[in-house]
Image (tube, rainbow over all chains, first blue to last red; front, side, top):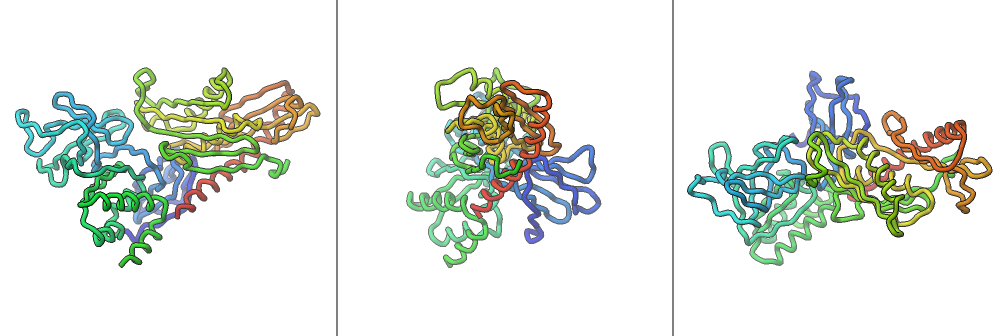
Length: 232
Length: 212
């Protein structure tokens, strides 16, 4: 599937895309695009970036944003900033703090509350993210199991990276994390909001990873992949 | 009027590490540094339930004055029209501008820097905007480059254009002039704005390429 993504061209806000190649005129649009009500079958660009197209009918704009806008279903890393009653307020890097109920943890009940303190880092899923409401997080899946979600241990390290790097790291075919695995063992949690939690045996390894991510923000995907292959 | 007579544009994007988007723009002798943050948390008194509140802060090199507040208002109005404010209600977008060097066309430089910073930040916009300053000297000649002697300026037009329709979204004039002169200045500025838009696109693409 990943092979069928084509990069069309660079666009600025306000420019129109008229030659839409999607079948049966049903286009799925991603970030940076809006539909034009007056002209069917044409799109208006709202963010500067490269237009990507995936057959048969998906279009989106990719650029180097750092600010996260919550989307439903995203897996994010957040920091607990407030505790009031049954509700925790979590900083996920968006405009507003997200709500996380203390009942939304595996095995939690009104009497058995999870052990969460202010400053703890959680890996959670966005249950809903409407623009008119505060985003809501959960730490369980639809079967009330935690899986990988929940509170992350305090011996990790949290950094912020830009969103393009996040998509790059989360790509299964990306060789960067695999190359690092060969050097030293580590644990990593990558949130779609640009927050990355890491844990390794030595502080030196953590620093190496920080430097790797910092450097990869300023390189293209191709040059990173080539460098990684050279390491083998 | 040839494009070579227009003050040279130079810019650098992503100059600040902490803001979401930033741009340093030199328009002739004027230099501006712009930074855009957003959508971010909003103060309760500035909260709007149906759209993003745009906040603008202009800092001049010298002591703060009434001129700065005036420029803030113009910039705020331009940004409010250009940004897709309805996408992120109950949040705010901060536009900060720092004057680095005054060469006569501060306002147009500030507007252009703000636009580049918005593009760099990836804020949703309906269109891009470009400002052009045009000077009318006491010999009734039009020029995009400010005269060396400030007393020679008879009138100054600063016009801001929309990239999609080419219409005016803001206009600021100083001095005295006739309607015909304004119309002529408007025509010159509109032609010139095309070069500014082209410059914007080139700069943004170059910034993307530099990283590749």
